[in-house]
Image 1 (cartoon, rainbow, N blue to C red):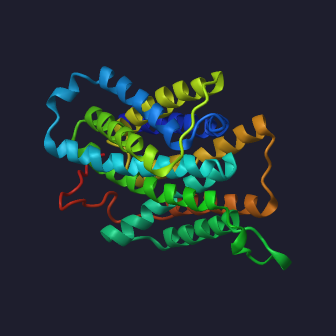
Image 2: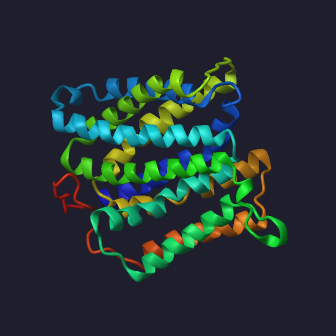
Image 3: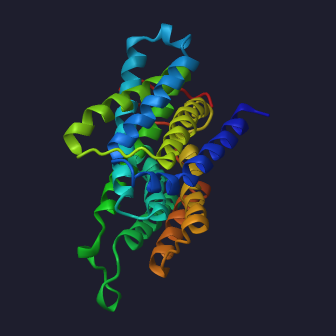
Length: 307
């Protein structure tokens, strides 16, 4: 099996893990405030990664440390916005909005790094944002948009999508320059530190110990964070950022299925149409569109062309 195929399969696996845990996290937030929950899960993940990759940490350089810290900032912002927003919106809706980060990846490459974009990709981006509009802006009287009813959790989750889009782009570049083991540890550790610092400033934290909360911490800290970001750091050495984004579009599908099975949640026609537009837009942009450069140039350093 080629490394590229193995990378794609492993990315699908971690997407399944992420998508199927939205419901668990939603329930766990009844016993813990969002930022405190993320602090504990990321602290656990940091310890696990440091123990597992301890030999690689002896060779960390300042450039690698800087790159890992930058990626960690976007990881922190993504999870802070996502988990806080999840308290105010539904699991399936949160997953679909988080999945919009995969539409933003090619858009950011065009706007910030001047990567040429195919017309089909433009069409896909417009379709995806039309879907976002349908999902986040409820219908008012006579079917018109009612901006007054936009959920604040939806807006927070859109911020999460933007942060995760930058995370995919910068992670893909960093793993071309530094050992993926170092980047995996540094990004999670940096996010854990930032999350811990933000708890007393941004929220009124609370913690009620329960079996469900402990289960959520163990699963999200080990599988969803330590294992998942170690795998993503390795896999993005062999998959362009746009390919990774395409695979991650499956996350809301897994979340929707999980939410339907365990919470019997159903999306209305408007939201379901928006969800389908998001998926269709991303698939069209990836399958029919193409970019002239698979990766951007960051900080003046060309990205490796070896894939």
